[in-house]
Length: 256
Ligand code: PGA
Image: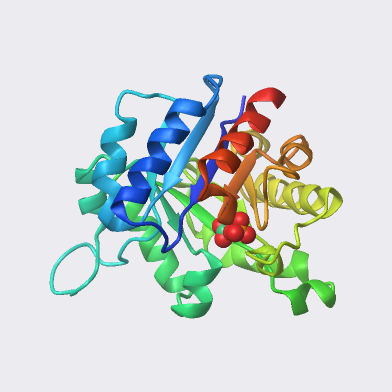
């Protein structure tokens, strides 16, 4: 069975005290989920070490970084390498979130390098893709996602690709309250899975975890998580309060 994930992407939010409180409350209030389910806290760099210590020996929880350098090591002031993340025992890292692509101009070349660095260090990339509003309105969304897959993910060989988790995050849905409908989410997730089957094979496609992200919250999560090709969510705003984040984790738990 595919791994089901509820991942909280904190972005640039919280102080260390707020971070600790959020993690402690989430750990205390979460239901015990199945072996094929995972809750991830994608936290800012300064909180990685503390967050990792909280989830140590708790198999249903893990910590992710939100970014890493495309370089291995050396004179790159301000950068954090995948090797550094690995030395902290971090098992996951976001790559290619739309905010990294649009605000920090990260292109396919840089994102491929980041994924290579992560894979070399046995860290699983959570690779994000998504179309903007204009692309959706002009019916170009499938084409856009196919192009992102081809230019970035499908440059990986099959063994590398097996470690990747995908997050489909339509840009028009991120932080806007405009969630993709169940039909829109399912048809895109099915499309992505089909592209994986064509590029690699059906077995790999069926094993790939594909998360939905974009205004996913405690109210709409159950419908989205129940869709055949949606394996959980990458959650921004609703992951910042333990009450709503725990509700999202519970929605997943009740379905699987
Ligand atoms: P949102 O963010 O849930 O606040 O829309 C999702 C994301 O950017 O990962």
